[in-house]
Structures are given as C-alpha cells and as structure tokens.
Image (tube, rainbow, N blue to C red; front, top):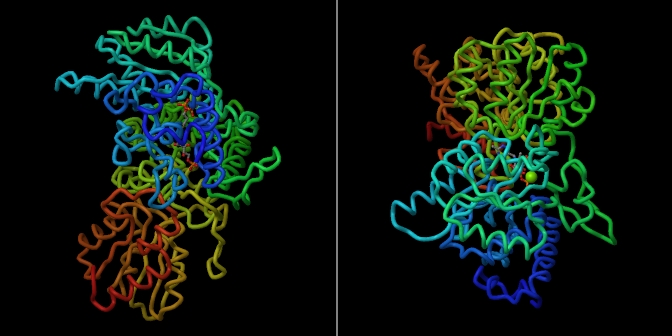
Amino acid sequence: MSGVLARVASPADVRALPEAELPRLCEELREDIISICGRVGGHLGASLGAVELIVALHRVFHSPVDALLFDVGHQTYAHKLLTGRRERMHTLRQPGGLGPFLDPRESPHDALLAGHSCTAVSAALGVLEGRRVLGKRGHVVAVLGDGGLTGGLTFEGLNNAGGSHLPLVVVLNDNQMSISANVGAIPSLLRTRGARAFFEGLGFTYLGPVDGHDLGALVHALREAKASSRPVVVHALTLKGKGFPPAEADAQTRGHAMGPYEWRDGKLVRSRQGQRTFSEAFAAVLEDAMARDSRVVAVTPAMLEGSAMNALKARFPDRVHDVGIAEQHAVTFSAGLAAAGARPVCAIYSTFLQRAYDQVIHDVCLPGLPVVFAVDRAGLVGADGATHQGTYDVASLRPLPGLRLWSPMVGEDLEPMLATALAAPHPSVIRFPRGTLPALPPEVPAHPVDAPVEGARWLRRAQAPRLTLVTLGPLGLAALEAARAEAGWSVLDARCASPLDEAALLEAAAGGHVVVVEEGTTRGGLGSAVLELYAARGVPARVRLMGLPDAFVPHGDARAQRAELGLDAAGLLRAGRELLEGGRR
Ligand SMILES: Cc1ncc(C[n+]2csc(CCOP(=O)(O)OP(=O)(O)O)c2C)c(N)n1
Ligand SMILES: CC(=O)[C@@H](O)[C@H](O)COP(=O)(O)O
Ligand SMILES: [Mg+2]
C-alpha cells in the first residue's frame, strides 16, 4: 500500500505527518470512504463532509487520552480509518464486521457508544465531570451536527455545560442538513450573528464560523478551544457529501445514506433499487387519507426520507410537519393537534420512539387523545444494528390503557388499519417493519378496505387442531408456510397486540399447544400477553415464545438473523414440533 493513509495506523501518526501531506491524506480518506460505501453502502454524505474536521481533531487532540464524542456516529468513517481500523473497513456494517456507528468495544478511540442523535453534549459533559471527580486528565470534545441542535436533549446538555464553567469543547459541524434539509429556526440562526449571541448567552466562548474544509483554519480554532479554561463552541461550516459529485448534487439528502453503488466514468451506477417498502405503502395510504379528510396531518421527527413522506410533503406542505430530531416534541405536538380536533399521524421509528415514552403515556394516553402512531422499523433493521433495532415497542406500549396496537401482515392491511385508527376516539399504533412488502398468500382474503379491523384473523384453521402458531405482523407468512407442512396446525394472526382478541386466543389453545411468534422482545411482548391471558383463565396449554432474545442484537443481515433466531418457516416448524414432542418450552 502506498500513499499517506497507508502510513497512518493511529492518531499519533496523524499528528506526526508533515502539514504538506494533510491535503493528500484528506483526499485518500475520501477515496476510501467513497469506495467502501460503494461496496457495502452506508452513511456516505456526513462522513465525506467531516473529513477535514476529523483530521484536524486528531491533529490537535490526543485520543484516547482526550475523549472525542461524536453525535450519532454516522459521520465517523474518517475517524475509523485513522484509528487503526482501515484493514477492517471493508467489513463495515457487515455481519461480524465493524459497526455502523461508534462503540468503545470496537476501539478505545470511540469514547462512548452512539447511534441515536443529540447525546454528545450531555455525554461529553458527564465524561468531563467524571474525570474531574476522579482526578483524571484529558480534554473532552463533543462533535455535534446542526441537526442535533434541533433536539431538546442537546439543549439540556448545553444549558448544563454553559452553567458548569467546565472547559468542554463543542464542535458544531454545520452543514445545514439533517437527513433532509434542516428545519425550524436553527438553520437561519446559525447563518446570522445571532449564532455568536446565542452560544455566548449560554455561557460558551464562540469561535467561528470557520470554513470546515480549511484544515489550517480548523486546527487554529481547535487549538484555541483546547487552550480555553471554560466552555467553548467551534462553529465549522461544512458541505455534506463533499468531494463526491453525486452526493453534492443530491439536494434531498446530500448522499446521507447510500446503498451499494459503482462510480463508473463519472456516473453513479446503483445496485438494483428495492421493491416497494412498508414505509412507502403506508405513506401512500396516508396520502389518500389526507386527500379525503383535511383534518389528517402527518408529523415526522426528521425522518421524512426514511418514512417515505417526501411526496406527501410536496402535496400537502402545510399538513406534513418535519419537526426536527425531536421525538418528544413530535409526540406532544401530535397530542396538541389531536386536542384541537385534528387527526395527527405521527410516523416514528420504533427505536426513536423510545425517547418519547413519557410523552406517549402522559400527553397522549392519559388524556386518551386520538393520535395515530405509525411505528416504522419495528423489528430487525439489519446493518444499523443494536442501536436501531425495533425491539421494545410492543412490550413498552402494550400495557398503556386505551391504546390499540395493530400490526399489518401485508401491505393490503395498511389501508383498513389506518382507516380504523383514524376513526377511533383513542390512541392507536400501527407497527410495521423495515423492508419490502410481502405478497398476500392466495388462501388469505384481503381485508375489505372499508370494514373496520377488529381482533385477530385465522390464516389457517385445522379441523382437528394440535397446535396453533399465534403471530404478529409479517411473521404470519412464515407461520403459514410452516403450518402447511403439518396436519393439525393452525395459524392465528393476532393483528392487535393490545387489547387482545381473547376469544380467538382462547380458541387457539384448543389443541393444547401454542407457539407465539413476534419480531420484538419476548420479555413483555405479545407472548407474555398471551401467557397472562391463559394464566388468568386457567388455560392448560403448553406455550412457547419465539421472538427477539434478551440481548441486544448486533448489526447483520436481518433475514439471516431471523433464520438464526428461528423466526422463519423452518424455525417455526422446528419449534412447533419440539413443543408437540414435549421438548423445550
Ligand atoms: C434520536 C434520533 N432520531 C433520529 C435519528 C436519525 N438521524 C440520524 S443522523 C440524522 C441527521 C443528523 O443531522 P446532523 O446532526 O446535522 O448531522 P449530519 O448528518 O448533517 O452530519 C438523523 C435525523 C437518530 N439517529 N437519532
Ligand atoms: C444514522 C441514522 O440514524 C439514520 O440515518 C438511519 O441509519 C436511517 O435508517 P434507515 O436506512 O432505516 O432509514
Ligand atoms: Mg447537519
């Protein structure tokens, strides 16, 4: 290997490089990032935009003695490349390979685990204060995007840091983008002199704005910040996607997250684009609902793109609200909309809804407001891994009084479920997975679009039942495939995890054996609900729970992970047979 990057095995090597070699280093980092993302996909745009920033940080600070905390961690491919992980970069986001974000278990240069946004300032302040208490040395730096400035948690951290007078360094990587263009008042504030007044008002020294692609200017500002004895913000202006024409030209996201591609003769050749997803199908039925009923409004916390709501936003600009990376606000804002008589549909990823649990309970469920939550990315998400798995929504939402929790098995279920939810006087959840729409099996009639969805549905009913597979969501299809291979096996699609269709679930126990299957934690999920019901009614069935384990599932191929966990037809066949043979529970 020749080149500058090949001589960098650690941040010490970055510091030792002659200044004249740094522009070449940045070029080589970009070449690596573009080529790696081409092979395995990933968070290209943010990582390209942060190259000079990361080189400058490693020139000025001494990681890991100095702690560098990056918000989210999606912008850190240059950091990974400079901290001894270059040889393994081709494994990025692959099963068993380097993780998608940051994790101290992967490298001592990853000061704290990340994946969700807006944590950097609070975490960095905690690290700084912890070191102070323990008498440990080292500077602490929080690297934050302008999108991260739209979240309340960041403001809580800034408020605490500004009042602490501790020498926290905050680097604001301002590219005017979240995943989509950044929203609210923050983007314009950051482009005026108000930015200085804002940070100074919060107790920070303000340095900038600095050209975030000018290494000399960055190093100068970071040295000044390092020497400060009080909180300081370095405001760097960057271009997301910098150095890769297709990303720079992508006005929607600047190449935020890319699937694999090839860059041939100045042209981007992408791998085959996927089939229609649950998110797209949901957005389409929501669009119809919005066209029919002017009270229906959509809310997304910074996930217009992922929730497939761009077309919706273009058609109904005043009724689609991207509120920033602000899940708590998205939920309480939706509660306010519902209280005023509107019909809010709050689309939110399962993993990000975790942030807003109290808002769901206190602001929506307690007053019984008819907010519809479209809980996307429910279940395994693949390459984004442990921080992004949609594991806990059923277990955490199921106990909330008055909330109905639906899950479609196929795309055809979405329209009647949304209509049912929008007509209801209470809160509803419609949870659906990341990924493509499965086909409706020939033996299952589509639910009539104008009939309300009520309770469970039998997908297969054996004459002399021995065992029932009780499922939620698309796993019903795997269960159906398993059941076709066995006489006496029935399949019940629960459809609603709360409240349970008790009559159908009691009937499901007629054969004495029940396997409950869900793509969520088995601790407190649908299976637990079924066990609660059977215990309360004294039902003597043998029950086996299949779902996500009591462990954080890492990044991987979601289909392979399902197979490993027995959440496919072969696994369910095995599980059912074992149960019938009197094996494991
Ligand atoms: C709590 C949470 N909500 C949403 C996301 C999804 N998300 C990841 S990166 C991102 C945009 C971040 O914008 P910014 O901080 O400005 O970084 P940039 O990508 O522009 O470098 C969003 C919304 C997340 N990771 N965490
Ligand atoms: C970093 C982050 O949180 C998002 O970019 C996330 O990776 C998007 O996931 P989807 O690709 O499932 O929309
Ligand atoms: Mg940004």
